[in-house]
Image (cartoon, rainbow, N blue to C red):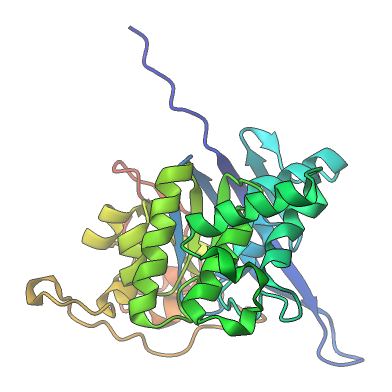
Length: 326
């Protein structure tokens, strides 16, 4: 009996890059900030890929590229095998429908001059031929799905709490029935009690609607709770990637080990010895030669300061870019 082929991923990125030219003065030479420098991943239907790392590592840049808020400098992006970076009308329309984003600050992402009903109807008005009554019916159904009452339809964003505003932002992201939702720090601006409610809502919606999430976060306790796979980024590149259980139970890259050691644990037997990283995150304007992490790494050797390690796949399926692991 022939071995069954693994189903094609819903979304796959190949060597995505985003470089920004920067000029400090009139006569100074133009430098390049490599905000994202060759990131690849595959996302299966109904799964959650978490992207983690320090501020400035390129997490949010990746989210903006996936939703085409910004266009990649280089690389490829495929949705069900179709090239998603083509610039024809049909592909642009498909991108708007299939990939949506939920931003970190729900108040800043909602127009304060518009009522909630108008905000939620806008995607339908632009992308569908539904009548006004059909749009309102669709909006009320979605509001109920995310736990908002029908009387909220005629209220303005400032009349809601942070948790309610994030529910509105999630509802807006789901109005076109997308397959993929990019959640950029969706709960970091919320209180701890509200955070759990919004996370549980996102997980329920994922199960009900078959959604796939790209979950961008710096909160590793949240990531452990919601994700199926984790990608750890450092200075625009992936340094370790694998399923959540492997990453959290057996982190092998020194940077991943340091991140997880800082995660608070209630059970004493689950706590790790704290690994303190010395120094600051290098500037993307002037990245160090060799491995970008070598100046802060406790295992660094002379080779690390000269050569950049490649992201290699190991027998357990984990991908790691580190000479120490080799």
